[in-house]
Length: 307
Image (cartoon, rainbow, N blue to C red; front, side, top):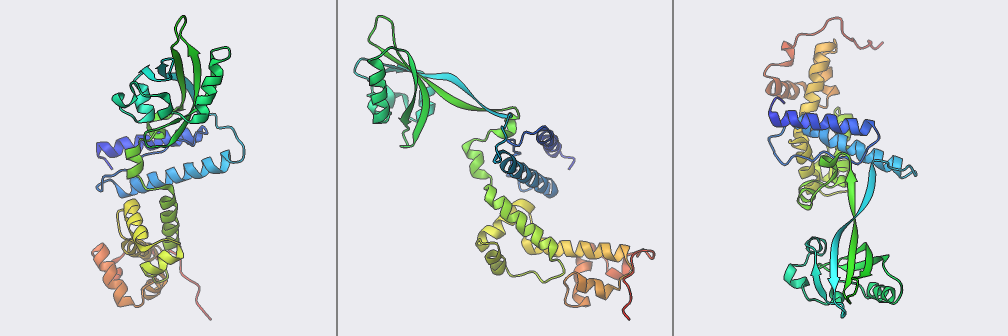
């Protein structure tokens, strides 16, 4: 926890909580890809992100305006066309927007990168008074459509046509956490996986007194496959499902021994162990001493005696 990187992540958590307190639920804390990160800190980050997502969906789906998430329209891309609608020049942003190389765009007809309906709109506008702003549908190199606002006009005393593309840029006050690049999205688990593992986590803690179902049964119970359940849990908690279950019931048993006067055999049963010898062996392996060696609080809770 004292490592500089962990300290920096704690500061990030504080920033995230502050944003949530003032009503901004768009921020997210990136999950770490470092297996040596502090387990509890990483788990806390996952849970905070989940709470922010749930709050965002529950609040803003009801019709509230999210004042922390706005769109700013900026003129960032310009295309210059000749009278035959061939691309004569353009600004570098067009390469980033459409995914083509410079040589693929230069001197190419506009029809290669725009939908036919949008080309018809441009032709109609050129027959009327200019300039005008319309929504045009461009086609990226990967054949995905992208709709942008565009100002259509002509250069004075020339036949050149100029298109100024106004593309929406997402802005959030908490920029470091709100904007994700494609590589980061690929490395982070999907939101669905986080909710799935949270449900499994809650289920285990609520059933520590019961035997842990097999991975196959757990996967069927949570509507997923064994691989996703096993790998997802290890990603978030840096341990196996069974190891987590065993550690949690042993920690609960330790607490009960220390703070109550319940007989040790009863405590072993209450924490899901079939018999006391197995419980004692697991307890000693986990803590380095047997249950009998734990100092008990004699004024702790004593269960009522049966008649």
